[in-house]
Length: 230
Image 1 (cartoon, rainbow, N blue to C red):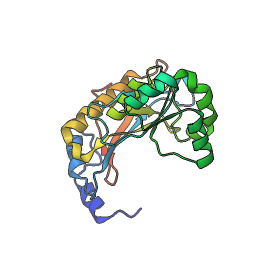
Image 2 (cartoon, helix red, strand yellow; image 1 turned 180 degrees about the vertical axis):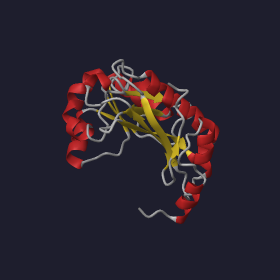
Image 3 (cartoon, rainbow, N blue to C red; image 1 turned 135 degrees about the horizontal axis):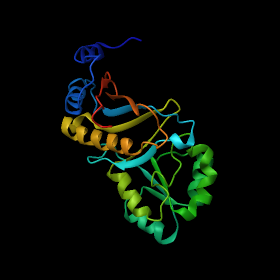
């Protein structure tokens, strides 16, 4: 794969065989970010579990100490008082069947997070086939199906992220922007990794965290040392 000059220059600063401690790793991430825009920093964590087994699923949600640096658009399915509370909390879109129809008929997806009150799940269930594959289906585990929709909206706006295994047993999650600087990125990194370690399934055997790589949108990956975390 052809890599640009900037990428190759950045890659020279990183020792591919080394595993970096959090502070050094985040420092390198910031130094090697060369793009003209504020790149997102992502973590890619490979776990020693098998996501095909229900008892080895790893998923949850956490509010990062410094948020993600991204403006999150929130859609809430709620009625009455809960709908009013969601609007007051800063939800971008609030509705019930009208929103279902808008998504179904107009193929509308101008939102990043979907939150629903439990009584609305019958309505939201009709969207399972379109929201599911995009990872937008509300779930109690992620805290996006909740009676307290206002709190869920506030958390999403504050930088709450959901982590979950993909089919290859890897978790991909943003932990902020390059402009945050190493210290804030390290805080977010430690918060997310701590949550993933806590979410370790009882049935997981052997090495839990196989590898962890941090990378910016356009930059090379930095291998992180996770030995102290587990």
